[in-house]
Every structure is written in C-alpha cells, then in structure tokens.
Image (cartoon, rainbow, N blue to C red; front, side, top):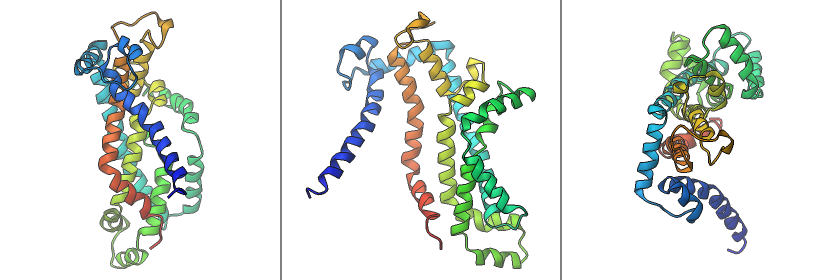
Length: 286
C-alpha cells in the first residue's frame, strides 16, 4: 500500500494541476470584475453574473460572437469531413492498393508529418493570395484539411486490422478497388473514423494562427481568433489599448474561453469509447 502512495500522490497532484484552471474558468464568469480580484479564486458568484457576462458578449460588435460560433462550427465540421474522407482513402491506398510509387508516397507522408504547421502558413498565404481566396472560408478549410498524421494513422490501421485474405477474395470475385474499400474496409474502420474525426475537430476548433493570418474581417473570425480580439480590447488584460468599445472585462473573456472549451469536452466525453477502440485497434496485428 505504501509503495503505491508516491504514485497516487503524483497522479493526484497532476489532476489538481489540470482541474483547478478549468474550475476557475467555470466559476470566473459568475463574478464581477471586482469580485475576481477580491473574492477567493474558486468561489461562486451568482447566476446573474453569467447572464450579465453573456449579455456583454452579445452586445460586443452587435452580436459578432454568434458569427464566431457559426464560423467555428462551419470551418471545423467541413474540414473534418474532408480530412476523414481523404485520410481514409489515402491510408487505404498506401496500405492495401497496388498503386505505383507506394513507398515513396509513404515516405513523403512521413516527411510532411515532421514539418511544423506554422512553417507552412506563409507559403499558404502567398498561394491563396495569388488565387484571391484570402479572407474566404476556403483559405481556412483547405489548409486545415491537410493532415498527414491522419493518413499515416489510416495506413497503420488498415495495414494491421484489415484481413488481406478477405480483400484478395473480393478481388478474385471481381470487386473493383472502390467496392472493396466501401463494402469491406470502410465498415471495419468505424473506430478509425471516430479517432480521425476527433483529432481533426479538436485541431480545427482550436486553430488560431491560420485563421488569424488568413482572415481580416471580424465577422469571419472563428472563436479562438475572436477571443484574441476580446483580450486585445480588454483594458484589464491590455492596459496599453486604453479601453474597449463595450464593457468587456475579465468575466466576459473567461466566459468566451469557456464557450471555446465546452464543445471539445462534451465531444470527448461522448466519443471516448471510439477513441480507445481506434487507438488500440491498430496496435495488434490480427
């Protein structure tokens, strides 16, 4: 029992380290700006505080936060659909199909995984600027759909879990490659679809730098970029700006941050079964 005590204490300290900031984020919008400074950090203010903070967010920019929320959903879901479709087909082709240059393409995928996404922002900006797509949804959706890790994950999954004998039997029976993929590989890839969808949604929902560079109109921001605009206009957090167009204070910023975090937390709670299955499915070769 005493031998496990250091491990338990370490896990407990890590849990407190992760939970306390989230708990503060939940409780902060319930207080006034003065209450955040005077009251205990983890104390509860009032439900009226939430309503007042929400009303200030709605009044900011004539309800621009609703545009940010819709944009985040639109960018994330569209990128998710494209990412999952491309990764499944590309991973299947690399793992099962007899395409030429299969190994060089796999090596190219691994190399692409090593390139930091931030390093690609400037070339992408120049490319989309030349195509006159800057400040359009495509300037965010198309680059966000480029996900080489997802392709490699699909390659590993199909390489280890898809029965080769079943694929060869279908080919002998005259099934085309697209039919083998849609009728055999795809039904077996449900855990992989959930894993790719979760990774894609989380990455695109919290994406800040790419939309910040590509989008210049405030009503086209997603939530992370909009949250940055709120912080930039909050005197308590940026005294140099000298003020804000509306009374946006720290409770409003905390509520906006909570709006960003809650969808990911909800999706994780409901999808963790598929995440575990997707992670473990490709770990053992059948």
